[in-house]
Image 1: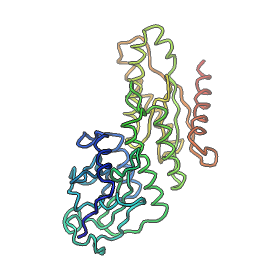
Image 2: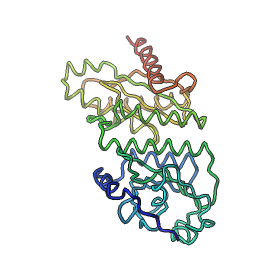
Image 3: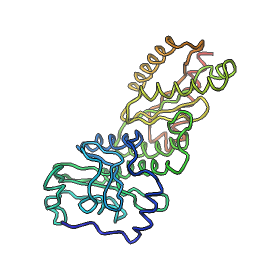
Image 4: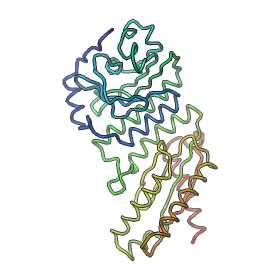
Length: 319
């Protein structure tokens, strides 16, 4: 078995990793969403966001593996962080570096591994986003690109620990975070020929809530809408407060017709909330839905602009 080498920049790398203050923290949805996406996209039993500490690899997110860490000296990710590209082992049992590795010989019986290094703001490799299978497999160029896109999204979430990309009030992504994550997501969708829909929301009569009941009550309405929206969407969808009373969501692998069904479920949940609420106002919304088309939407701004325009048309029909 080949033990991973220690990077020449190990001291600085570990210092950066510890500065993130992420090791041994609870699971977070923003990372779990990415491992679920990886598991589904590549049809593998195991997907990880792995961070390589001094003597271990620790899993910030783990799908399909009943462990929170493994020793660094038997880790595949310890090898992956040494290079710049995706580290691929098509068949570990046939690879002299890994054929007698405990993770190959025993549970989880790794045969295939692909890990993309996760870079911090200073370029240091913190760990990987990796996928694992119990049988050998090929990994084609479009698979490489998709894994890199997911890793870029994971890197953005790591950057979120130092950059303000979360909305403080609702605790979902803000516009800046959404633009970055959706940018990676739609590039992946274009390559994989996967459908996606953007939904642009605007709360109805929100100014009236603020003017009549005060900004504290207005903030409560925003938080409530964000919670109901998040509860309605799938765990792999991307959602954000774009600004003020505007929200947006990207529904992956979802055409416009299916997105409209999601909106109906959202409206039903809000109707239940409004009927049970002790407040003398309702939380209602206008929306616009757009099918992502890489020919029409070269970037996130174009997609958002179309969603905003569709939302405005919807709001005009209510006035």
